[in-house]
Length: 370
Image (cartoon, rainbow, N blue to C red; front, top):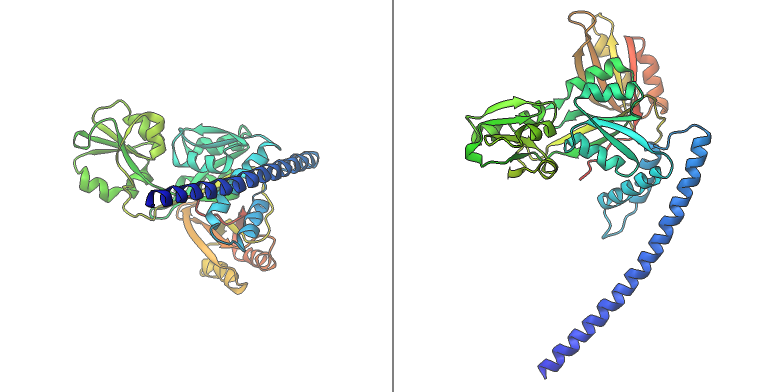
């Protein structure tokens, strides 16, 4: 009797699965047709943008779409899942409107490469560059439409070279993306044979304690990027690199240890830089550079104008001005768009206490992409 019951249960289960699969197939067909219609509209929009000389990349519009779709989600959908799906849809839609060239800090396998790949997987030719200077130069010389550069790490702070170049290049920020950094130790040998460790200075700093504990006698050598480190370690029997798991796959290295950062919440912020400023509405962040008058209270008064208008500062960083000894410029990030009334008032008042104000741009506030 039990055998008959088991067989019956199996038959019922098979019927249930077939019914569910039939529903899934019907929904897949419907999804495919809806995507076809959406991409047809993207082609129409691309034609309009081309006639009016507008860029296909509109971060403000894309962010508004994601915010609208995630505002009233129902399980099992999550905001992270929706954003990942629509990041792909946006990139495919842009590919039907305009192909672009995007420079990034390479070689392939770097974290900058991963950030560029997330945003421009389908609609751009990604162009690896040897250093941050080369990325900025490619965009300035119009050999690339956009550039992707690291600007800040959650444990090691600002990437000074990016700040220094943005201060003089007059490029603009039109998007930011934050990416979790999972550093790995890569090599073609075993841990006990490693005598030299290569990596970018930021990655080495992020893993300082781990390297001290597990490779105390190893020589540390800096490279322009983490993927350069993987290339340097490849083929050497006594070398290792601190780099991404993607670099391990690209360059044929073994992962000796995973996620070796001293702090597990290790996140890097990247900027997408462009020759032109992109208008942005809604929830946004703005970045500016201040050169202050050399008078008492200049910084105090400059910051005070934001407080008076209810504008929240999220970052302030000083760098040498490189024009006069002991003079500094200040990089400031704040929440809000240049199109907001209170931001406009703050910026107007700000000029009373500064020698120069350089606007790097307003852009959608970035989410962490997993």
